[in-house]
Length: 123
Image (cartoon, rainbow, N blue to C red; front, side, top):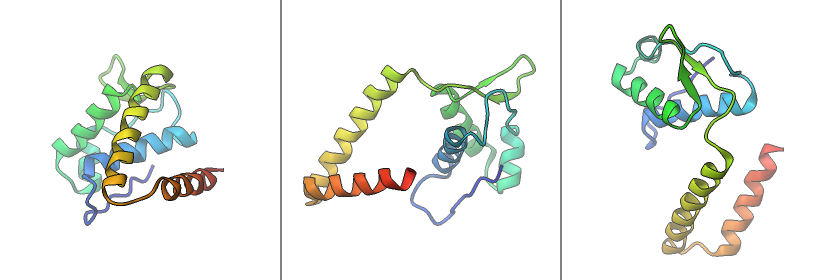
């Protein structure tokens, strides 16, 4: 699995890695039980610091997307956080984003149009 990392992005590298793995799980590219490279190998492959890769893996594990098997190997899980927990967290994130957008002068109809457009991209 190719993990794209944009070193010029304002998004932290560990978050880019996190989203790449979450996207791969969502698309089915990374199925439950599939072994992920060790954080050291991932760091070496991407040319990044081990702690950055480890931070991404820790976040994936805390969100329930990966786990550790008996051999201390990181593996993908079939599910992430519970639906109810995730929906609450998602709602809180959206409130923050909407508040920030309003502070930047973005109108509700503009936000809604963008959200609809983004949803259409997924279909």
